[in-house]
Image 1 (cartoon, rainbow, N blue to C red):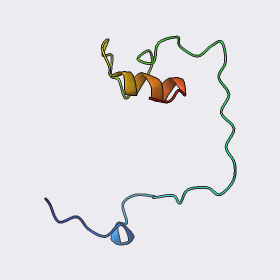
Image 2 (cartoon, rainbow, N blue to C red):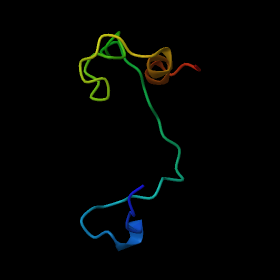
Image 3 (cartoon, one colour):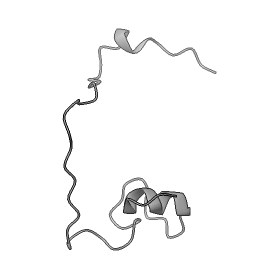
Length: 61
């Protein structure tokens, strides 16, 4: 494994702390039907795992 620098020493990026505030996520009829459509994590793949699809559909795997 590579020796990685401590994140506190990195000056070329911004690492934000997680928010303590609640987050509101709204699914609309404009959202794609398939988890792979317009999803940069799928990169145009047609076949993805059930865990991947469940995550983006908001279901439990």
